[in-house]
Image 1 (cartoon, helix red, strand yellow):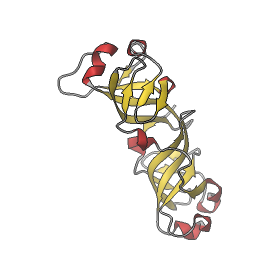
Image 2 (cartoon, one colour):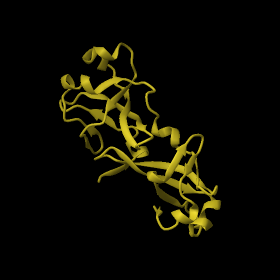
Image 3 (cartoon, rainbow, N blue to C red):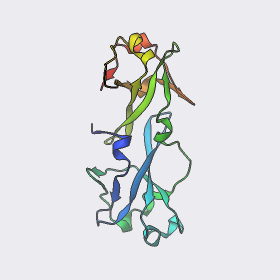
Image 4 (tube, rainbow, N blue to C red):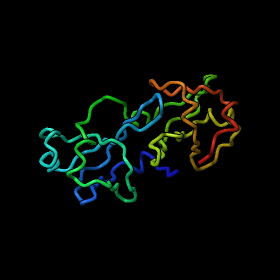
Length: 186
């Protein structure tokens, strides 16, 4: 399992096998019921609509289906530019973006405010979201059995299977005590 964070993926360029720059990662769209990445949201490079007319003219945002990419300093596709039309389309709001979770409050089932979403972890082999990173608030330390550090922020990972709902905040289906043995301090 290769894991990357949303913040580490933003700004990466998507490039075809024949070295055509498609664009830069702006965000990731996901299916909140399965915590699966649906597509990459990209700000396109000039000239893309000449190569792929079905995108229409002047489109600056597109979405690319998740694929078997090679990810390093860039995201490299195995396909060439002439072969990607089936995988790319104009961006739409058909699924939410991960960035909407940034900074959201995370609350345990028993109503304890644990902290705020600091980052989102993505398994780029399976294109799943296994965990979210949460920066703890002062109210979250004691119920989780953690001690507050003097200078550094404390960030923990919470598995997405523990997320009950995401609205204006993230409500967990576990109490703070139930989470205590299953959190990982990053």
